Image (cartoon, rainbow, N blue to C red):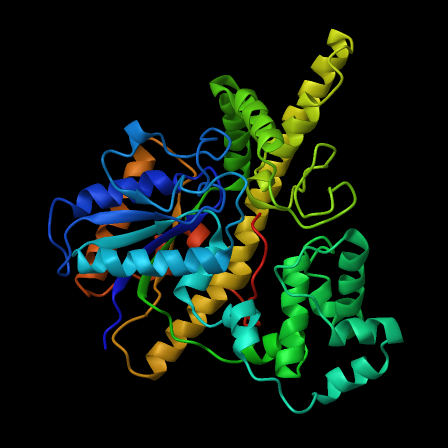
Length: 442
């Protein structure tokens, strides 16, 4: 059965991903291509799933959406957790629905590992608590797990045999003990999770018990298997050179402040006090897993990960009786921290794309060619979005439009390396492991 088409647009923050998605959707609404007319946009930004706080999360304003339907955007309460497995389930359902409507799904967002798990299935199942719970326990342990278990002190061995349920609230002392247990068994996986993230720590431990293997061994085995993608996916990576992007990101922070960023942070802080968010227990929690009046916000969860919230919530929580000069100094420091965090995030996004998504696409395309399939199954193009104005129209909008049209009509596509110096520099990646497990939202 032929794979159905999907267009994915990824890249760093501040390069115009949403702008291109809307432009492509509008172009597709004018003419039938490959049996499809029109498009719907599916959000793949982990922060934009939350309702309100539109400035903090950089949502496209309604008036700029040009009537194009945007899905999985602004539908979660700020206090809710919404993780990659949930998003993949929702996105696949909406993609199927979009195809049945005769339209093209355009998946767009900066949370690239969400997009990667959507395109390439099979990397999340082993870490899904429901799957682990449904798996019959094995009769024996792998040699590496048996060796690690033999070295466990009695209190950790007892904990291993009596793990709490994933949904169970545990206190800070127990959370630390669980993380120590995982560290003793599988330090490579333990270092991926903060000790406060009891849910992921417990999932890793449950996986260990149910399979009889260390999670790191399972990951290593998975990385050797090339899984076919869910969809025939045209992937656009929008890229801007750091010397161009960084000043653009700094200016955007200033613009967000002018638009009312501080007001949104204040409103979110107040909403958190009125309706506490469920968080893993840690010192300062009220003991039932909810943030109490004296709770320190866990900035690794949900909307509280948004760049800008941590920086300015700390500033807004300062003693208001301090001298004006102290407030001005603190404000400038918060602005600078947000700008630095944004630039660092953009750098991490590029690293993920080069080191994770590109190798996965490369391996899938290699396997497809070995099976004599007509063309790459995940063709990936880097579009240089360093320049705006007329250069955007020619280098990004029109180029993407032509490639998308050829992709949908199953015509030959250009060589991705012919699209410019940036493409030749960044699209060539060395052979490496494409191991991929669930990670927290950045």
